[in-house]
Image 1 (cartoon, rainbow, N blue to C red):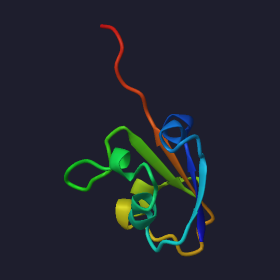
Image 2 (cartoon, rainbow, N blue to C red):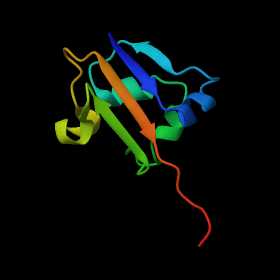
Image 3 (cartoon, one colour):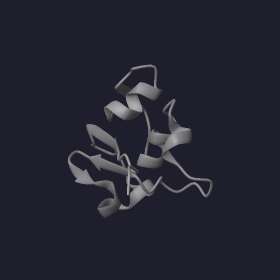
Length: 87
């Protein structure tokens, strides 16, 4: 089991809940089990480009991205960036 920690922006969309204990084999499986999964993936099933995911402090993209195994992992942090503003 791994603990998923959502950034404040995503937690707001998950009814204020920031932490989830998830049983999953990969990062992709864990993220798809979250109530905000529709915000995390695009229509092709890829991570939203404004999303960063860290497995025990290491960028998951460096460990295989969605296929990154969670064997032995303790924590996955999901950070969403906010884009936009005035030009």
